[in-house]
Length: 260
Image (cartoon, rainbow, N blue to C red; front, top):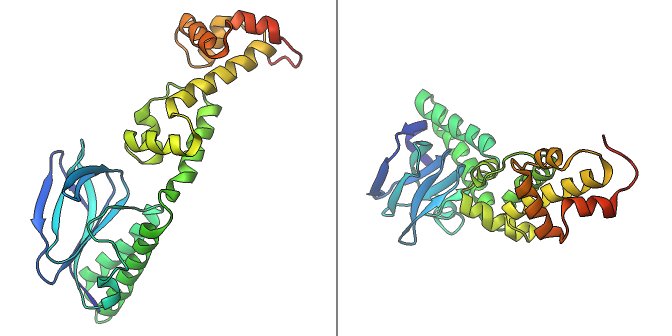
């Protein structure tokens, strides 16, 4: 059976908040972080993205802190005498990304509600809800590495090519895939073989080539529609990529099917 000792949902802490302690004997603690946070893993503090879950066992060090902003997280302290969940079925002390975070959080809210209501049936229901939480954490933890991010990255790439005129930043892109900027750059290069900022440039050059060949817009207009605030910068970047100036490209590739 799993007995909940304490449960709170959406606890909020200010910037700079930090915890460093040891889990009490016989107790376990599981936490679900809505915001970015840094955790001690393998003796080092490392930053992890939003939507992560971490489980601690008795006697384990708990060390985490806010990462440039306040914290929003839920936590449950509990006893567990079931061997399956105390063995290698679950990871301890390692943050795990939760792909469908909002759906997962529903089980946490239900468990916290049962803890607060304390009906005669609550121990039975809380145990079943904690089983769901454990099994889903197992699914998240032992899926193929970073496979949960693939759809988010594909959606981001599609947006980059759909809106090359946007003033894309690493921070904005990282927010869309719910990762830090370093992880964003690491996984983007892994998935697509190009850095995310070079992808932005490529999307702009591709749009410019289309407009140069199929429209009568001026070089200045085209540069603005492709996200450049300065047409001279656009011209230099275009030539460095294509080997010719925008004007030369237009002369060589002017075709039918006008866009304007």
